[in-house]
Amino acid sequence: MIAQYTLELRNGLPSLVTEKIHYISEKGYINSETVIQLLNDTLRLNRKAEEHVVMLALNTALDIIGIFPISHGSLNESHCRGREIFQRAFLVGANGMILAHNHPSGHLEPSKEDLARKEELQQLGKLMGIYLHDFLIVSTTGAKSLMDCKSE
Image (cartoon, rainbow, N blue to C red):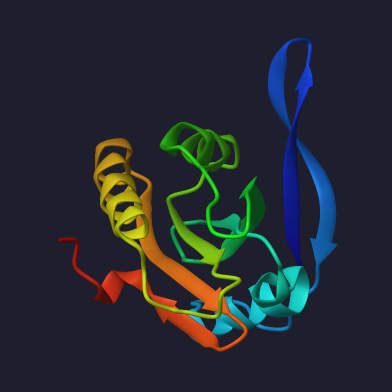
């Protein structure tokens, strides 16, 4: 069972609200294939017509402890900042995270912005002790891990 959360203001402060519960059969260490299947089966991320960014919060055992929609953009971009991502990770006590976003075009090659965001989040994560374990691109044609790609 994995909770999908959203943030709402309560007394002027952001609070976690459980939006949906996803039931999965696998428990324990996850790999990119398992994550991609989870995102596509539960959120239909590979089928979205606009870009969406999603964060999976992980505990020290690499179990998924929460799913967070981070941003929803246009056909070819979705803005997200480290602040919003790490705020959610802190609220659930995450030790790590996996980020994923979709490319509605079907192309799996990362943009310069994708690679720059990955580098930024890796550096922020090192400073805060919340590690970026993977950064995925998904589409109707497949998926790709940005951890295998170098920034230029």
